[in-house]
Amino acid sequence: MFGPEEITTDGFLGGRLTIAQPVAGYRAAADPVLLAAAVQARPGQAVLELGCGAGVASLCLGWRVTGLALAGLEVQPAYAALARQNAAANSQDFEVFEGDLAAMPAVLRSRTFDHVIANPPFFAAGSGTAARDPGRETAQREATPLEDWIEAGLRRLRSGGWLTLIQSAERLPDILAALGRRAGSVTVLPVAPRAGRAAGRVIVTARKGGRAPFRLLPPFILHEGAAHLRDGDDYSAGARAVLREGAALPWPDR
Image (tube, rainbow, N blue to C red; front, side, top):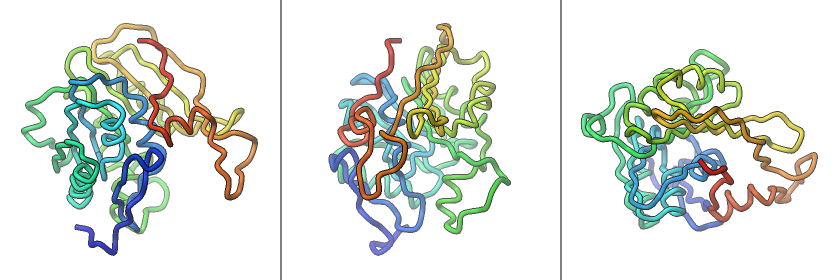
């Protein structure tokens, strides 16, 4: 577990949430906040996050949509403990289980959910340079293939339930191939750093048993202007609403 000197407490959603994170390990930034903003959940629904880390995505979603039954699965016990701590600090009910999604705890295998969400590791096994911190390495590099994340998520969904992922844009073909015919009504939202720049992330939603046509949405732009403003806040109005105020992403009607 992390000691007090190994933790910082950071504000999310403009300080509406306070999240304890490791100084040297995996630290959440915009991606889990965007993931939470993409989930069109309603009060009373059940949501499972695969690889919940310190709980940022689920807790952002729980702040925006009250009355959800939130559950998370995390393979690293120290991060699972942080997620529970963060839920308590933010007065949210968040049931966190420890385990590998490839060998999911029996209690989760017996349940189904209206939504499954995930921010899987971006980097394929054997690619690039390993992170020095083992927690960061586990969070960023695949030990379980991306297709297995998708398979695990679809298995835990009720018929008609929604899978929502955020991933590196270069992994989009892998996501679509893994979804295959088991899920439809697929919508892809590219997330671009600036207007005219290639998307670095994609947010993908798919419905178990869905049959609506595939949709590719216009990109969501994170920053204004052509270059970063040093010591300045150059978020676009849309990104500021999501990242600082907890707003939902502007999805079209389903």
